[in-house]
Amino acid sequence: MTDHIPFEIQEQIMKRLPVKTLIQFKMVSKPWKSLIESSEFMADYNLSQSGPNQLFIRYGKRSEELKYVSILDNNTFPQHRFVHSVPESFKLLIRKPRVVGSSHGLFCLYGEYPSELSGSYPDGNSMLIIIWNPSINKSIALDVAVRYDLFTSLIGFGVHPDTLDPVILKINDFIPSFEVFRLSTGVWTILRSNLPHESMEFTLDGQVDVDGFMYWITWYKGASLIVSFDMITEKFTEVKFPKCLSSKYFSLSKLRESLAVLEYFKEAEAHVCAAWMMMEDGVQKSFTKLYTVSTQVALLNTVPGFRNCGKPIVGTRTTVVDEEHEYEEPVSLSVYEPHSENIDGLEICGTPPFCLFVGSYTESLLLLDHPDNHGKPVRT
Image 1 (cartoon, rainbow, N blue to C red):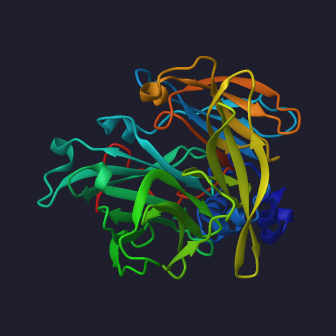
Image 2 (cartoon, rainbow, N blue to C red):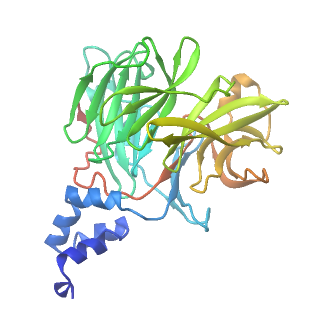
Image 3 (cartoon, rainbow, N blue to C red):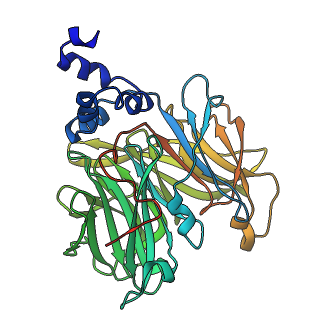
């Protein structure tokens, strides 16, 4: 039957199919396999992808095996859930991997890699960086040298907006120097420092990739700053905080394809969070306050992410513990309704920050043209 349909029309039809169907179609014919595995088709598929939005959640307690689940983010939420099996490379790590971030259906994680497996590095230790596409159950593991330990080498992750090439930025030490890794080249390139201020300190609170930029919260002269890294020009730029922000405690998140800043503070002895979204007007960037999250039935602990409709996913505890152990207690994830201040539980618990991650997720074909090296990391 397909012999009567022009191949160009077949290609347009395939761009509208789910990833799992495309994987099956690779087995139908050599022309289809060649098309689906081509870099041009994968790029067009990702850029035109209009599949259902999903939430991707990693959760669990420190003493338990972590779970990875995606939930359809539509009017059926949160009924339709899919549990993902993790790559073999996760099992090579000494401790649970930290989630760096997500972009275009890819997730980046890293953790400590046993020296007897990695070999000895003359200048330091080793960590394993894993780029994972749950849609096609494929991962790329990179054995990377770090100085001293994981906490003196920070990792940023994003996908180039034009080429869809996965990009890793390694920040060495607290007086930073930089190296950039592009999966298409497979090599690290030393990047000349072009920070807006000298002696800036990058925090361990994680980073966010939005529309070709990686964003971090940094410290400079006792104040918090947002710094962006342009994956096209490889330039750093300061992003101004809203002037009316008074708290010293912030985190970054992504709401749809915009940067969100979460400001944590106390108000009448309650833990609350103000959510701000970055707006762009040409080259100018400003922030608009969306709402304040305040729960009366439980203690607010964190706001790790958002639904596509804008409702925040909040982590709450029903009991108050000593502040020294605040992050050792598991929290329950719920959806918060800003207008009514109601919270609807998801029946998901985790221990922040390392055992809890929430991010938006869309199926992707990225990594399909790369061999899966699970269990045999590439040394870079």
